[in-house]
Length: 70
Image 1 (cartoon, rainbow, N blue to C red):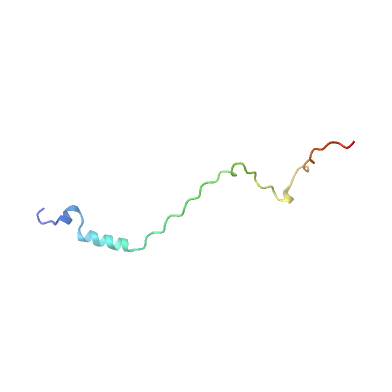
Image 2 (image 1 turned 45 degrees about the vertical axis):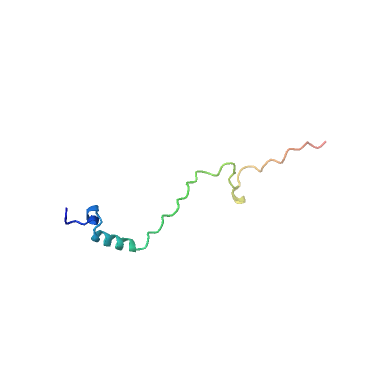
């Protein structure tokens, strides 16, 4: 143990420092894309858009209520 220097005893050898210098000289990896939240159905309090006019089915909507003519 007397022939080891203080840095080698701690674990920082010259070989390790050279390997780290080579490793970290490369460009940093690209950041991970931001994850989008999973959408489960429409947002609250919003009705879905109506279907296109050509896809309308069923009877026409009832007219608004009004008093019968006299």
